[in-house]
Length: 421
Image 1 (spheres, rainbow, N blue to C red):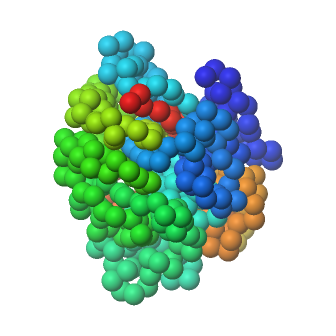
Image 2 (tube, helix red, strand yellow; image 1 turned 30 degrees about the horizontal axis):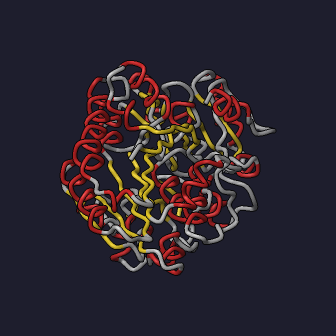
């Protein structure tokens, strides 16, 4: 485990300013992208140009399984997971985890980018859904990707209803659900009921058979019944729980309520699912738990309110896009020097500024040559937060006390947990 972490921390891109605690996404074999590729390979399908996990025993487990469950706990970070187990020697997770491996998320370390990578087995550079808020150059607007609506709108899925986005064409890469279905495996998704109507779900979960829940206990009972009913396989089941992410955004990450929530997930997994699985259900089953990213606390006093900073806003074409921990800036001609002076003079220890094209070339968004849509969406400059810092440019008052999207250890490294059946 220590060697695994050392390898993740040692990898740094060339030609970019760096900071202690930053972690480069390990797209060569220790990232969520490689996990998705390994799931595909486990069903006998060649991954789409992405290396499989550099964890031979887990890859072999996936190859020998007929039934694969990936339980995604939004915002489950490796740092949080290890701290929880150390602080709670009687945690149910000590008994649940057969093995634990540190992986990296993607950059930016955020749900939009990470989930799209998990459903395509491709890095953000390739799929282009790189952050919560993006410039859609061909539409002439900035948009929120989870809601698929303009940044200035509160109407979910407006871009779909207006005919400006076709979910089957907007993200042009094949989905692993479609690849696995073509190989004879059934693909299911177990998600909070209302999420099945969201624009983001319409982008990802095509050719996926929907399973719904409305509470955490409902999720667990549905999962147990599904596994006991479908004993033959082959199938891939995606399970998504947003509770940690919701609490982390509202309260930050250093509160007992997050640990209580995570412990309850484990307790219900043990009591309502694992203890009640039949022998037939266990046969050929592998059950993995991971996160899409971690979380860091970003209290109000550490948050830069961009709209109140004329020296920052003056050189920009419009408000920032991207994430509060990895903001994309589009700068007026000749204005980049002003942005660098602003951050170096006002916030030298809180943010690092990267040229957008250099960040792409350095491989932070993934290896290879970016398609045009990714070039357009990164911006001229990328401002990455350090420590507990963040940038906020919204109109309504800031309510987020925790964020992710950056490249600090706490938000970038996630656990991959193989459950003991």
